[in-house]
Image (tube, rainbow, N blue to C red):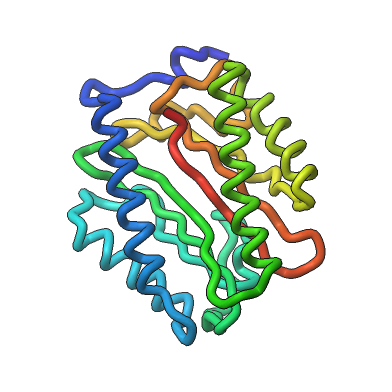
Length: 219
């Protein structure tokens, strides 16, 4: 593997611009979450998300907007939602956004809960906690991407949830990162550089039909 090629960037790349893209994408996630309400269909939430991104002034999306409700929180990015569910009073949903700001790619995602279902709240919290633990492991050990996802699986088990091992993170950059064919973070056998990789954590509740998701830029 050519680590240098897999971490290549374009002539416009800057870490400050990546940080700006990150900030704006999280601003969109929070704004969307604040508007999602019980009684809303999943398709309506996705339309809302796209509208908010446009209102915030994104250049464009670089991956489809994804808002998942209920059982659809178990589905991976490449899988279609099952139907068009309506968000219940006690329900769980996640938001996954990939948008370009000032020619740089933002990518962020988080899980939210309506109502007081303790399992749902615990699952959403676990996704964020596992992310934080893995991010800290990257920061303190400098281990390779493969080892990061081995550690993520260990931490998921420790929290009593199942890690979706098909979701392994990916490159970002000045748009478009896809030209570098860098593959998944979880298959990268070098030390991931800051400002170039998205760490994704998707988990499933061990007995109930829902999951949770959290992702952010490693910086």
